[in-house]
Image (tube, rainbow over all chains, first blue to last red; front, side):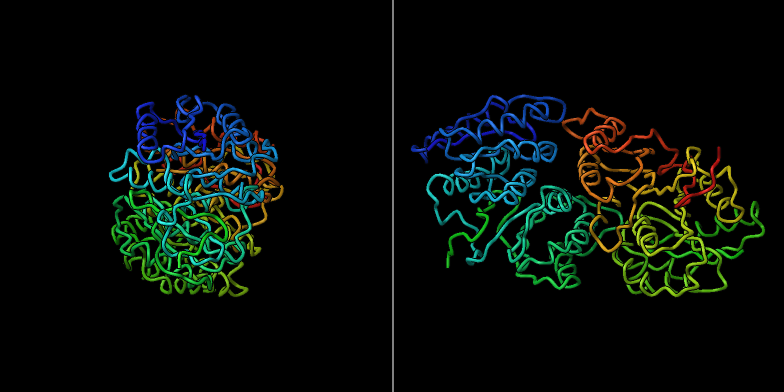
Length: 275
Length: 275
């Protein structure tokens, strides 16, 4: 299969792309990674200007020779192009798998809202910079190439699921990217946010009528929380349980996702039931 | 007049309250500051537990012997109590002025939504810790006690105005605190947020149908922006102009508000026309 790689947010280095190709060649020889040159552009904060990133995404999504679209890296930037880029997609774009997480959640949300069926929350090439990141990338490839059940988040129970970064989900509520999450199990994770900011985002998320229609929330890892003065004291589980209780949303326990090497894959929708 | 002080977010020290009393005694002898003991409580991150802060706010707001309610300080925490506390207000609470900004914006937003007529975005006692903060506090008192026109933000033009912190406004959209801003001039400011976060918040704010109904946006100061790698390059004015243009919202120039000693007062609604 052929997996196209685009960078809707921030760029990756060639060396990281080369490392991903080596991993794929060693462990997934039936897969070919095709990097759009846009992955290596730099414009200010971003992997090229907005029109570069939107065009690369739409070109690869509409390319019938590609079976999947893998987002290279998160950071920030996909909210600036998501609505316009998704509007440019043609019917064949619905056949392929879209894989990524973190800032790419803006695109996954918009695609889910637009009725795309094959989306997955999972590691990206940028994760190769993390300790243990190769394991997460192999898991993402394992799902993408072979639908390997061992790649899956272990708590998926057959109910429709989605997974998002807490801050990203907060920032797309009420926009043209917000999907209908009624009846979904919502998995959440975050990284590098103050705990008071996680608390405020959870106020925002759990106050949203659309989010209140979910079947429940499961909490992944909230990592690299900066030190704050005063200390927030409460940890992420206490925070999420508190807001779930206030909003009468079921708290369904922890989830094995996060910005780390242990990050497992969450296919959107009623994915395979591991049990 | 008697000005009650409560702390819906984080606590202040006694010394800061004493300094505010000195300033009021020297320059506004007709005013008496009445500090609720809750201002000095500490519970984890907050000025007391949620029920302490909600009760202090409602008690003082409903107190007929007080002419104004001044929020002691921002930080974080008022979103946790705003909806419940506002629901406890009695008719006489509508007669007094409510004054503050930053995190207190959650309360100002909810009060504006609830039809309270006397709200103002202005400095708080916590600003006495800032360089030049005494001038901002004198300006807030000048408006509160004497409706001093020199305290006012100089660009107010008679159209209904509101002012909010960018991050706070973003986080209350879609909640029970979001006010109707149709036809309002919306003044914005922020502090201590990454520029990519300001950009993301502006995506969120300008994508909201309610916000798109404003008469226009004016930009105050965005200060203490942390260094980020990669640098965002664009400054706050470029960011806000960009999102206003995308959303077909009029960008109406700069505003003289922010987390600093120059912060001027913005009465909500059709305030006095300085011109």
